[in-house]
Image 1 (cartoon, rainbow, N blue to C red):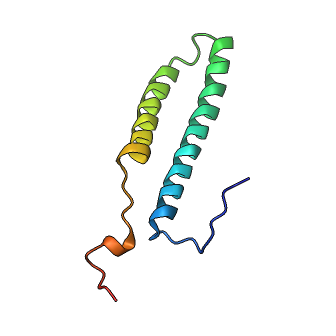
Image 2: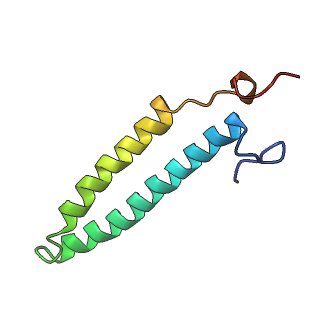
Image 3: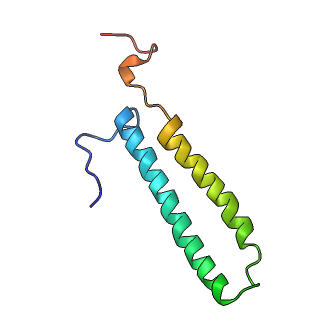
Length: 89
């Protein structure tokens, strides 16, 4: 069951942005797993036919790892109240 958001989704909401970024990463992992598992499955049956497969998989793994590091370790989601652009009321 997908997560439910308790209020109207707004990209300016830091908690929503964090959830959206993590869901996008999960979709990236799922796409990588689905495509590569099928391709490597057929590569096992027909060795020597998909010679370009490692050249696809290795850069994709690197991009997936970079995406994961960004989403999990680097990305910060400051609250809207902390921005100096907004006047306080």
